[in-house]
Amino acid sequence: MGAVATFVSYRLGGTDGVSIESAKWMRALGTLGFTCRRVAGEVLGPPEPGDVTLPWLALQPAPADQVPEPREALDRFDAADLVVVENVCSLPLNLPAARAIATAVDATRARVVLHHHDLPWQRAATRDVTDLPPRASRALHVTINALARRELAEHGIDAVEIPNSFDVDAPPGDREGTRRALGFAADETVLLQPARAIPRKNVPAALAFAEELAVLIAPRRARFWLTGPAEDGYAPELDARLRDARVPVTLGLGSTPADAYAAADVVVFPSTVEGFGNPVIESVIARRPLIVGHYPVLDEILTHGFEVFSVHEPEALAKWLSDPDPGILDRNLDRARAHYASSDLPGRIDDAFRAHGWERW
Image: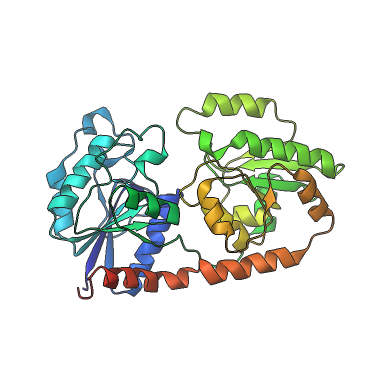
């Protein structure tokens, strides 16, 4: 067996962004000769060899599991050649667990990557945490956007940027089967918001856009589709907004994310805060027009020339739907292939390792 890489997070194997990007890194490290293992507070989906669940590391541990065990984490770290900490020490949503992992990071014999998807000062709930991310001098800090890399530098931490990556040649999902299973009419224009229902995803703006578009494209009907559940206490507000919706609403993912994109006609993504915003590139790969609001990292993505529609201008999308220009979709896919292809990820990781002095395992 070659070198062992242990991935550590609050949750792995799910459909959240950290889980998805962690899985891509595992595949990339596999091509570099690593055997990958998972350690998390919660491991979702099919089990894999070597999975370890540490209940105190979960986002919301049960009362009996709330006392973290740094020694337990350190033992797992020392058994590996490389430890990749996925956002635990970056966004301390479970602060005792984050500090326990930081302690293990400082003590372990293994090489450590701190993979930052978010940072404490970027969220109201964690901005007062000043001891994280840890200033571990031997660790390699990796951000998924340039904004985070600059902000870490302002806090005295050098980092490299490796953006999220995507299978730009992934086969499309099952459009007809998914629409049929969800009861969509053939003549409905389905607007998909691929997101959990939490405040920063800005569900009201997405729904308002669907309602405005419905008036513009009548008599064709518009349907709003939100894939994710309500979290962080947002359910009452979501329920109130959906009760007053002026378009039909569908909730739930469907069979797979690929099927959801295939079944939709438009992707609506008006988030106000994102570490990256995977649906931006996922909608491009699915060849769907994309409606966006504004969040800071979006500006970095759009510098590559992606052509999108504004959540404040439903008239522009209505015009495009009446006379679609596939050239926009073609050009967007070319730009995704040039800048965000997952086939480039192993090389980017290897380059970062070598620049950090990690040339041999």
